[in-house]
Each structure stands twice: as structure tokens, then as C-alpha cells.
Image (cartoon, rainbow, N blue to C red; front, side, top):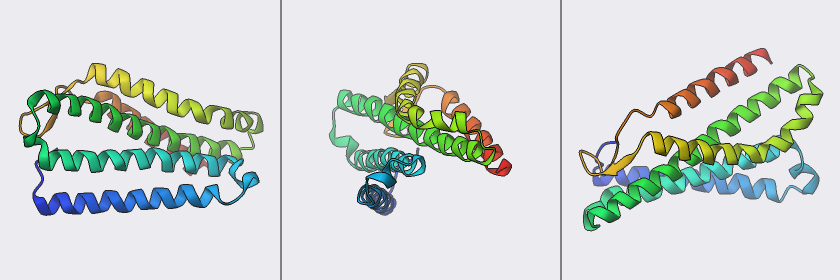
Length: 180
């Protein structure tokens, strides 16, 4: 993270707000399509992805505002914000990555007609959220964050778990999409 100028913060806020609008549009669009449509796996996965991305961008708005006005807060308040925000950000990011992996696995199971595995996927979609929360909690314990330094919030170690999860999900999704 780097310190933002006022114009950069404005652009970052605008981008996050546009993404929030897109996520809300997708959620509402799928919600009003009818019950039978919403019960299908792909719409449920896309709504899960939109919800996790909505949380991610709401956190982006909060962090951008914090970065602009963090100097008005006491150091203890800054530390609390950084810890809570980074856990929240990791959680929504992990859930997004895991949901994309879930979509990739569904495409692979469908392409190879692994219907027994495909039948289990709708049951595992809520677990994506549970695993995302568990991984982000473990990651926060392994990679603490503090207020201060060259940026308002600073990691105290390398975030290896995030890098590993993103790289693994990317590789598995790429293989799944190439195989289909």
C-alpha cells in the first residue's frame, strides 16, 4: 500500500462505488429471475461471487476513507481499524477466490460428465464462506498487521497464505477451463 493523493483517493472511491453498483445489479438481477433459476448452481455461484465482491469493495471504500483521514484518529483506533479491516479484506478476497475455484470445478465436472461430483457441489457452496473465514483468521494470526509506518496499515510479515491460495486457485481454474 502507498499513501494516496486526494485525486487518487477520489478515483479509487469511484472505482469501488462502481463495482459495488455492479455487484448489487447482479445480485438483484438474479434475485428477480425466479425461484427455479435461482436454484441452479451457476446462478448461485455468481450470486456468491457478487456478494463476496460486494464485501470486498465496501472494504475498499472504508480503507480509502481511512487512508485519507487516518491522522484524525488516535493510534489505538488506527491499530484496531487496521486489524479489523485487514481480516475483513482477506475474508472477502479468500471467499472470492474460493468461489471462482468452485465455478471452475463445476465447469470441469460438467465437461467430463462427473455427475456424482457435480451433484455434491451445491452442498459445498456454503462451505466456501466458512473456509474463507477460517483461512483469513489463520492468516491474520500468521501475518499480523499494525497501524503506522510508511502507510496507514502495514503487514508485519509476508502474506504467503494469500499468495499460495491465489496461485493454487489460478492454476486449478486454468487447468479446469483448458480441459473443458
